[in-house]
Length: 137
Length: 137
Image: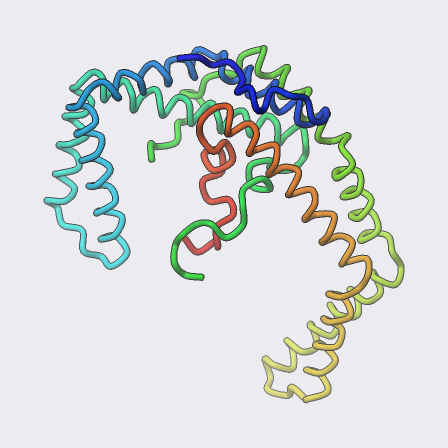
């Protein structure tokens, strides 16, 4: 998979925009990101891995919904544990989840690093307001 | 979403990424929006009239809270707090600060959008999952 900058964004707009693109490019060159892309591509070619990941996602969403009204049963937990075990045992799915965890961890570290330099949390300030989708507002 | 890793499990940022992040932070610090924001913060901290109004609001709110606790709140107290709140809220210094903050957030959001377009996921949302939310979810 190509990790070159997207042509539409390659044009220089300002020093800040240039440095944003530089940072994105440096991020895309990392082994962590390359492994994430490779693992994602492998999952795209693998129906069983996709099915496992979908089932886990559904079970997690179901658990999350039940958590809000206290309806979680031991069977729900057991079902999720079984699915997670099956996913870890199936290499393409397990690899994808591990790569995803690594890329998330790396993203958080990068934000911490930038935020330390700025003296303000970049991600918190950059995220759009009121988009949590919790339904309470 | 995967569990957050402990610091011991965390990986270190690549040199190329750290260098790009350094340049990014410097560019952000030097952009017009950051300069305006720093100036607005300084005015909030140093403007004599605005400081006086904030101090008076703090004192009036303190008196109101004390009166509320022993059931002696008067209409004058409520009116004074409301009047001072409005004076602080709509003071030019406060308005300038909110405008500067808003423009800085827009700049950060534009950078995040650019980075996110390149890497294929929302950098800010992954780095700070609850950013932009309502705080209740």
